[in-house]
Length: 145
Image (cartoon, rainbow, N blue to C red; front, top):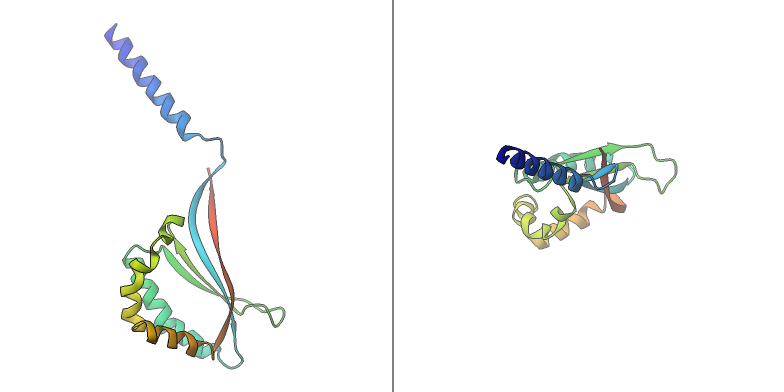
C-alpha cells in the first residue's frame, strides 16, 4: 500500500511539472540582439573596417569573456539607395534582463579600450567622419519548441 501511495505521489508530481512547463506556446524566448545600421561615407570603408578590427572586435571579445554578451557580428550589404546601410553591426545578449545596468558592468572594459568618458565621446565624434549611424533596434529570437 505504501508503495502504491509513493508511486501515485511521484506520478502526480511528474504530471504537475509537465503541465506547468507546457504553457501552450509553440516557442520560447531566446537571446536579444541589438542591430545597428551604418552608412559608410565615401572613401572611408577601409578606415572604418580597421577601426572595427582594432576597437570594436577586441572590446566585444572582452565582453564575451566577461559573459556580458554571447557574440557580435559585422555584415556587409549592397545599399539599394543612399539611405540604405552599407554595414550592419549586431551584438547578442543572453536575454532582455542582460541589458539592465549594462553600463555598470561594461564601463571598466570600455574604458580599457576607449579611455575615459571624454575620450569615448571624442572617439564617437571622430568616427562620424567615417560613417553615419542610421539607427538601431533590438530584436529577440523566438526558439520554436
